[in-house]
Length: 389
Image (cartoon, rainbow, N blue to C red; front, side, top):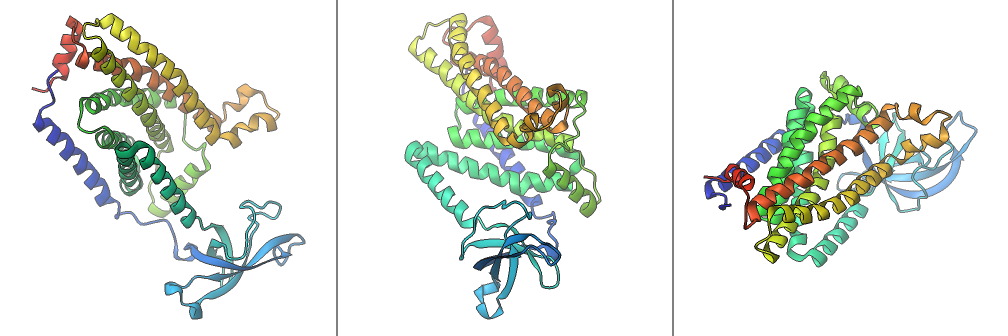
């Protein structure tokens, strides 16, 4: 297969960055949902003690005296207040606090404040630094590339896709699908460079995403998925409806979320299969199509078992409180899985796994069409389609 032309590479790069620029441009258009009276402020705990949870309560709660940070850290204008450290009277959701801890609070009345959550900014910053150091120490140049790719993908999603979803809730499917492709292209080109591996991986992933989108759309209709199985999704729908007077299809949000979950696993599978085919061709130049496909698929099927199990365990971990319903509710399991929250998790696992199963032979065939030294007539035909003239 001849190398892809320079014109095509320029077109690919310019197209990707134009889409990113368009997404970033729209990021500032959307107003946040935060209202002035709900604006969070940072505060420092100065004292912890036990007191009544409220004026009409007979239960005791852990309480704290706090100093709310003022602009410019001007202590003369700092506000002193008190908050309950228990989100609920019977549960300490956020664990133990100590004097000096930073927390986020919001105003609830004329002089009242309530705890929102611990301030985790500095902890996250430290964790990110540790992660970056390990990634670069182990992966060196490729580790640095992966960090750049991860950062770029995050910016596209947060600054581009999310505001567009809110601004155009009726077009979540096409916007989200383009977003998945853009993120995948960015990851491939930054992570693996402008190489045959990247192009083949992008082509294989594009076909996989199209089929997965069609299949998930069909399955969502059959199972009547509304997207309301997640409490956060319900909150998003309420906010979009009340604040922007727009309607949002959470079923479409569910499908795009599924595609994003699939994208990471497909990346792993595609790169592995393409690398395997390339190595086999370099080790044995006279290898035929049948032998090459058989050897590559042995690796692919073994990888498939691990990836599918990984997907299942990842979704189980994310939905563990929901899955605990099996042990807590006195219902037949077949009745429980009809709950939308459980149905959504099951569909995520099955559809993502189906996409992976498809991606393995697809990426393998595309790689064989590129690297095999003794192409068959079928491979010549595929090669003629892929070749950029």
